[in-house]
Image (cartoon, rainbow, N blue to C red; front, side, top):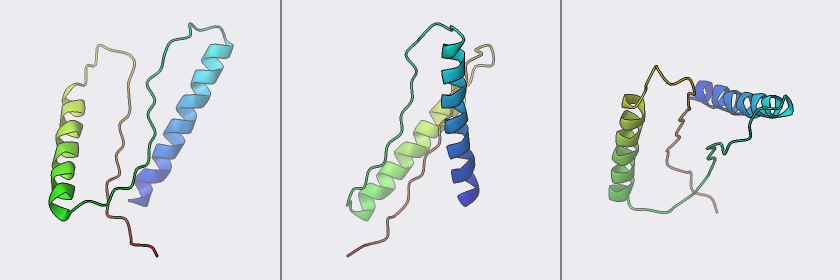
Length: 87
């Protein structure tokens, strides 16, 4: 799993750097859709299973929406896992 985290971080940094360069070169400024978030919730196992299934459905929907005639690609990476308890 660690092998997915590093490339995700690298992809995001590279995307932001390229965007900054393109803007410096005079590209039209458009709103870009970037969402980075981290949330912890204490939920029962039954809800955790529901959320996991909904996330899987969303991933399938995102994958099915791929349109090769569109040049702009978007990346979706999700990490959903039980958080170790801390004191």
